Amino acid sequence: MARPRGKIDVVCQNPQCRYYLKEKGKDIIKSGKYKSTGHQRFYCKHCKTYFMATKGTPLYRKHLSEGEIITICKHLVEKNGIRSIERITGHHRDTIGRLLEDMAEHAERMNEYLIKNLGLTPFECDELWSFVKKKQKNIESRSPNRSEEGDAYIYACIKRNTYFFVAFSVGKWTQETCGRMIEKLSERTVHPFPQAKIEIFTDGNDDYTYVLPDYYADTCIDYGQLVKIREKGRVVRKEKRTIYGNPDHGDIETTDIENFNGILRERNGRLVRKTKCFSKRRWRLECSIQLFQFYWNFINEFKRRTSPAMLEGLTDHLWTWQDFFSLTILN
Image (tube, rainbow, N blue to C red):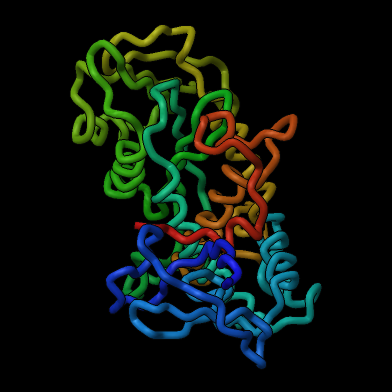
């Protein structure tokens, strides 16, 4: 009598297979290991193809061990730049840069898949200044890369109290950059109604005033602004303004997002105000924040063995880097 086959968690990685990335109906068996890497090899009986256990994950075709990759990822989310990680680990900066891009691409897919149907508890939004390649005053007026280089602003949104990092966008100080962030916010939350409004609080940036109506009806949103009045560079008073709906003035506050901005600058070396660890390309800045977003929401212990994602009910446990690497989106 044949021994029962053990459970196999992987799915077929062949795009031409009718069971590609499908759990139900798959028929996969183990078929030895690859000599070069030691990774498990699998065989799909439907399409009759072999594939590696790491295919479909960011570890695929990586020559570094999983432990070395985890070490690099930990450095990436703890303020270290690519060149400093090169000095610490001994791996070439190009290897680390490519690894950052692959991890960020995987993190983006995971964020899109896992962050959805968030509740309508208050959201706070703000902007962080940074720069790409050189500061704005050093950009030549005829530079062909003027739209990419110079000042870069990160529009960010978090959930109040849980510090769940909902969405961000990187670009110039424009309504278009703001709109990309609000679009992600609208996709990742439950749909608001007049009886269950979404609450959003920001500083005095008018970009939100013009962008929010493109995504939310006036009857479905309570939006307020906290405007800081400055004299000689000092904040002398704060004004709370109702823009849409009827928010409670006691709730109009941006303390959490301003604190979170400090966390981002503390944990991402590219966002330090005076630094040599600045981004040379904008998409590398986006990659670093994309990876940090997943780490902060699902892996980082926010308080008492809980992550922001656990507080929001998106998961029931603290994730590990191994969980992040191995997760595959199933159909």
